[in-house]
Amino acid sequence: MDNWDKSKRSLEMSRMPYKGTKPEIILRKALFAKGFRYRINFNKLIGKPDIVLPKYHIVIFVNGCFWHQHENCKYAYKPKTNLNFWKSKFEKNKERDDRVSRQLISQKWRVIVVWECQISMNSIAKLVEELEALIRK
Ligand SMILES: [Zn+2]
Image (cartoon, helix red, strand yellow):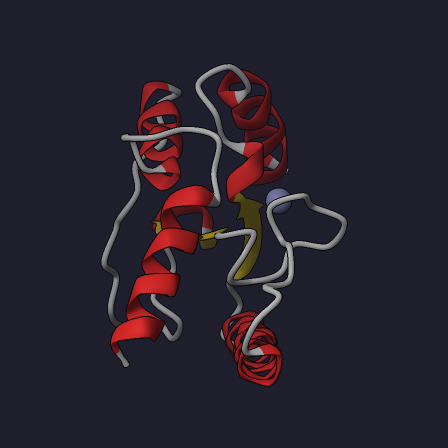
Protein backbone atom coordinates (compact mmCIF):
# COMPACT_ATOMS: atom_id res chain seq x y z
CA MET A 1 0.00 0.00 0.00
CA ASP A 2 2.80 2.37 0.89
CA ASN A 3 4.58 1.77 -2.37
CA TRP A 4 1.43 2.34 -4.20
CA ASP A 5 0.72 5.60 -2.53
CA LYS A 6 4.23 6.74 -3.21
CA SER A 7 4.08 5.95 -6.92
CA LYS A 8 0.64 7.47 -7.15
CA ARG A 9 1.87 10.63 -5.50
CA SER A 10 4.88 11.04 -7.73
CA LEU A 11 2.74 10.48 -10.82
CA GLU A 12 0.35 13.05 -9.56
CA MET A 13 3.13 15.57 -9.12
CA SER A 14 4.89 14.91 -12.38
CA ARG A 15 1.93 14.74 -14.67
CA MET A 16 1.41 18.40 -15.47
CA PRO A 17 3.62 21.20 -16.71
CA TYR A 18 2.68 23.69 -14.03
CA LYS A 19 2.82 23.72 -10.29
CA GLY A 20 0.66 25.45 -7.79
CA THR A 21 -2.69 26.65 -9.03
CA LYS A 22 -4.99 23.82 -9.85
CA PRO A 23 -6.31 23.87 -13.42
CA GLU A 24 -9.96 23.92 -12.38
CA ILE A 25 -9.29 27.00 -10.29
CA ILE A 26 -7.64 28.79 -13.21
CA LEU A 27 -10.70 27.92 -15.30
CA ARG A 28 -13.20 29.00 -12.65
CA LYS A 29 -11.53 32.37 -12.22
CA ALA A 30 -11.46 32.94 -15.97
CA LEU A 31 -15.14 32.02 -16.33
CA PHE A 32 -16.03 34.26 -13.42
CA ALA A 33 -14.15 37.15 -15.02
CA LYS A 34 -16.30 36.62 -18.13
CA GLY A 35 -19.39 37.05 -16.02
CA PHE A 36 -20.36 33.42 -15.64
CA ARG A 37 -21.68 32.44 -12.26
CA TYR A 38 -21.14 28.88 -11.24
CA ARG A 39 -21.61 26.45 -8.41
CA ILE A 40 -18.95 24.10 -7.18
CA ASN A 41 -19.40 21.06 -4.97
CA PHE A 42 -22.88 20.72 -6.37
CA ASN A 43 -23.37 17.37 -4.69
CA LYS A 44 -26.89 16.87 -5.88
CA LEU A 45 -25.50 15.90 -9.25
CA ILE A 46 -24.03 12.55 -10.09
CA GLY A 47 -20.31 12.57 -10.72
CA LYS A 48 -19.77 15.81 -8.78
CA PRO A 49 -18.96 18.03 -11.75
CA ASP A 50 -16.14 20.49 -11.14
CA ILE A 51 -18.15 23.46 -12.36
CA VAL A 52 -21.92 23.77 -12.66
CA LEU A 53 -23.57 26.62 -14.55
CA PRO A 54 -27.18 26.29 -13.38
CA LYS A 55 -28.42 29.14 -15.54
CA TYR A 56 -27.30 27.37 -18.71
CA HIS A 57 -27.92 23.88 -17.41
CA ILE A 58 -24.33 23.04 -18.15
CA VAL A 59 -21.82 21.02 -16.19
CA ILE A 60 -18.10 21.12 -16.83
CA PHE A 61 -15.72 18.37 -15.89
CA VAL A 62 -12.04 19.16 -15.71
CA ASN A 63 -10.45 15.82 -16.45
CA GLY A 64 -6.93 14.92 -15.47
CA CYS A 65 -5.22 13.66 -18.62
CA PHE A 66 -3.53 10.83 -16.81
CA TRP A 67 -6.41 9.48 -14.75
CA HIS A 68 -8.92 9.79 -17.56
CA GLN A 69 -6.41 8.79 -20.26
CA HIS A 70 -6.81 11.72 -22.61
CA GLU A 71 -6.38 10.30 -26.11
CA ASN A 72 -3.17 11.23 -27.93
CA CYS A 73 -2.06 13.35 -25.01
CA LYS A 74 1.49 13.22 -23.76
CA TYR A 75 0.31 13.35 -20.16
CA ALA A 76 -1.79 10.24 -20.63
CA TYR A 77 1.15 7.88 -20.61
CA LYS A 78 0.82 4.33 -19.43
CA PRO A 79 2.87 3.46 -16.36
CA LYS A 80 5.37 0.71 -16.99
CA THR A 81 4.84 -1.19 -13.76
CA ASN A 82 1.68 -2.75 -12.31
CA LEU A 83 0.24 -2.87 -15.80
CA ASN A 84 -2.87 -4.81 -14.92
CA PHE A 85 -3.62 -2.59 -12.02
CA TRP A 86 -3.45 0.55 -14.13
CA LYS A 87 -5.32 -0.98 -17.01
CA SER A 88 -8.28 -1.86 -14.84
CA LYS A 89 -8.09 1.49 -13.06
CA PHE A 90 -8.23 3.37 -16.37
CA GLU A 91 -11.04 1.19 -17.68
CA LYS A 92 -13.07 1.79 -14.53
CA ASN A 93 -12.53 5.53 -14.79
CA LYS A 94 -13.67 5.52 -18.39
CA GLU A 95 -16.75 3.43 -17.65
CA ARG A 96 -17.61 5.76 -14.84
CA ASP A 97 -17.14 8.87 -17.02
CA ASP A 98 -19.45 7.40 -19.66
CA ARG A 99 -22.09 6.38 -17.14
CA VAL A 100 -22.04 9.75 -15.38
CA SER A 101 -22.30 11.71 -18.58
CA ARG A 102 -25.17 9.56 -19.90
CA GLN A 103 -27.10 10.10 -16.68
CA LEU A 104 -26.51 13.84 -16.68
CA ILE A 105 -27.60 14.08 -20.30
CA SER A 106 -30.74 12.13 -19.48
CA GLN A 107 -31.42 14.75 -16.80
CA LYS A 108 -31.14 17.42 -19.51
CA TRP A 109 -27.73 18.71 -18.54
CA ARG A 110 -25.21 19.62 -21.19
CA VAL A 111 -21.87 18.05 -20.39
CA ILE A 112 -18.60 19.72 -21.34
CA VAL A 113 -15.29 18.04 -20.73
CA VAL A 114 -12.16 20.13 -20.47
CA TRP A 115 -8.79 18.43 -20.27
CA GLU A 116 -6.20 19.65 -17.85
CA CYS A 117 -3.63 20.02 -20.63
CA GLN A 118 -5.90 22.62 -22.26
CA ILE A 119 -5.66 24.82 -19.20
CA SER A 120 -2.66 26.96 -18.54
CA MET A 121 -2.24 30.61 -17.74
CA ASN A 122 -1.14 31.17 -21.35
CA SER A 123 -3.99 29.39 -23.07
CA ILE A 124 -6.85 30.18 -20.75
CA ALA A 125 -8.17 33.16 -22.74
CA LYS A 126 -8.57 31.07 -25.89
CA LEU A 127 -10.14 28.16 -24.01
CA VAL A 128 -12.65 30.42 -22.28
CA GLU A 129 -13.56 31.98 -25.61
CA GLU A 130 -14.33 28.53 -27.00
CA LEU A 131 -16.29 27.61 -23.90
CA GLU A 132 -18.23 30.84 -24.05
CA ALA A 133 -19.30 30.04 -27.59
CA LEU A 134 -20.42 26.57 -26.48
CA ILE A 135 -22.20 27.80 -23.41
CA ARG A 136 -24.13 30.56 -25.14
CA LYS A 137 -25.08 28.37 -28.09
ZN1 LIG B 1 -4.35 16.01 -22.21
